[in-house]
Image: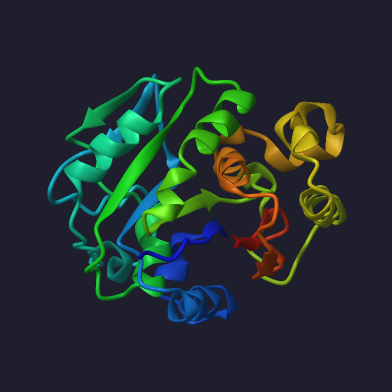
Length: 257
């Protein structure tokens, strides 16, 4: 018997969280310690956008350093977790209403490995990554998450990695600064999650100017919709790393189940 796995949304923020000891990286360590060891991990990262949905299907996904201007130490990190072509195939079969193509080129980008290197540092658990299809509507992203619920019963940990508030154009290099509008939208999203109002969260473009500023480009918000789609109505909700940093980046992370 395999116990049902929770679903995680992680506000991953800066790649530096992979090497810095701070409240965010510590919270990821803590979550890794309390979770049952998953059979495998499916990650949906903000940093892999494609035309059409793709899933990594190689035996050994590479570690992608998809950033620049950071210390050499960060570029030297590898996360040599195995892949799982079998899991990739299972996910293709589960997604009856969406076509998912196998990918043999991508790997694990920093939205995935910067979190997992803290959560599961031994890199022994197989990991596959699902892309964000630029052509899908927010509702279609949510619905694809719903189609993958069975994975939880199979011991698969699903992690959405992005940020509820993510506007790099307005970010400032002050870890303790938080703009009022960023905190307001972060709080509004929490309230909507607690109320079970997924419709409003899917139709975020109707939440006003604050939402438009907070989400900016949607790739960091969309992984949240996958995790909401995977959530069961009875799942308890736990929040951690509840902080806005750099003015316009929300690090709020969530455990469903």
